[in-house]
Amino acid sequence: MATVLSAQTTDKAVNKVTPRLFETYPTAAALGSANAEQVGELLKAGGLGMYNVKSKNIVKLAAALVQNHAGEVPRSIDALVALPGVGRKTANVVLGVIWGTPDGVVVDTHVLRLAQRLGFTRKNTPEEIEQALCSLFPREDWDPLSHTLIFHGRRVCGAERPACAACGVQTLCPNAFNAEHVGRKAH
Image 1 (cartoon, rainbow, N blue to C red):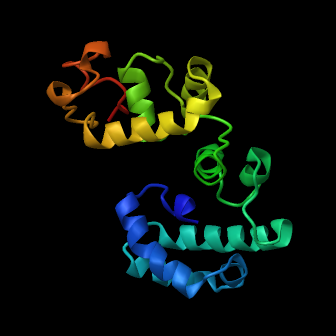
Image 2 (cartoon, rainbow, N blue to C red):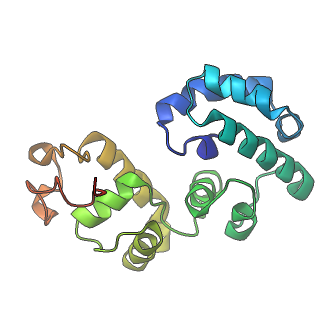
């Protein structure tokens, strides 16, 4: 649920709202039978944006988990992406974090940016970048690669102000000290 809620928001905001969400709805059955408007109010009070859409998605998701998977999180990419509000990125986060078996590299905004800046690919879409990274790195590295790139993107190689001087991989980076315009969406 937290991964679904993380779309278009920060982990900080999600981490603020999930304790109350899980306290109020401790099981998939409880959330799946909840009133989406009440769930939305809880998300709104926690500071989450898009709370109406997200509340409907997680209530439907919880109901589908109960109906189709006995309230348990599935272990396959196909079963996960069939759930409401779950795409490849979310499914791979769940498969990697919970089961240690991602079906690909999670490509969020940080991974997209760093894959291009580090010269791993010139591709632009998450799907193409995922394929490129999966072909470059062994399967056992996919989950830690995602986490490492995300962490590096948050802490060192920011979108607008990459800290190249403080970067531990600057000597390997083809865009070091000139990375501001690489891997960023056009405005």
